[in-house]
Image (cartoon, rainbow, N blue to C red; front, side, top):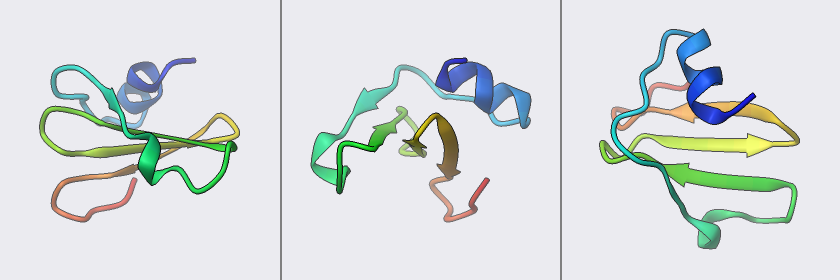
Length: 58
């Protein structure tokens, strides 16, 4: 399941396109992306964590 699908499943909307930010990935187990609203999407072993631009964590 992709990031957009996982986000929508928990009621969060990805704004615009996702851009990968490899300099924020501490190890190869993480993938970090930002959308156009500067919300952060972190995938660790397929589990999505979202940090909204206001600091709220989903």
